[in-house]
Image (cartoon, rainbow, N blue to C red):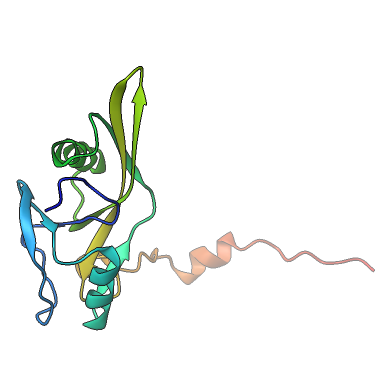
Length: 155
C-alpha cells in the first residue's frame, strides 16, 4: 500500500460477491472493509464489466475533512467518517473520487470526496424481493366515478 492516498481508491465490504473469474488483491483497512490493491478504479471497472457483472456508481458525493496531511492514517479517519455519513446502506463498495490537501494558518487538513459504488451480477440495483409494482386496487366503478368530464371546445 502506498503511503499517500490518491483518488480512484476502491474499498470493498468483506463478503462481497465478485465474479468467479476475477482475481482481486485487497488488504484489510477497517473492520468489515478492504482496500483494493491490485486494481485502480478504471481497471477494476473494466474487469468487472468484462465478466458481465455491473459496477454501479451512485450520484451524490460524501465529503470528510480531516486534520493532517495526505497519508494513510488520515485516509483511515476520513473513510470512517464517510462510512458514518453514508449510513447503514446495503451497498458494498466505496470510491475515493477526490483528495485535496490544504493548510489554514499553517495547520494541514485534507478533504476527501467519495461516492458509493456497488458490485453485483444483476443489472437492477433494486433487490429482487423489493421489486414489486405498486398498483392500487380500485374497481372500474370507482374509476368511472372519479373521471372528469371531457372539455368541449367551442368553435
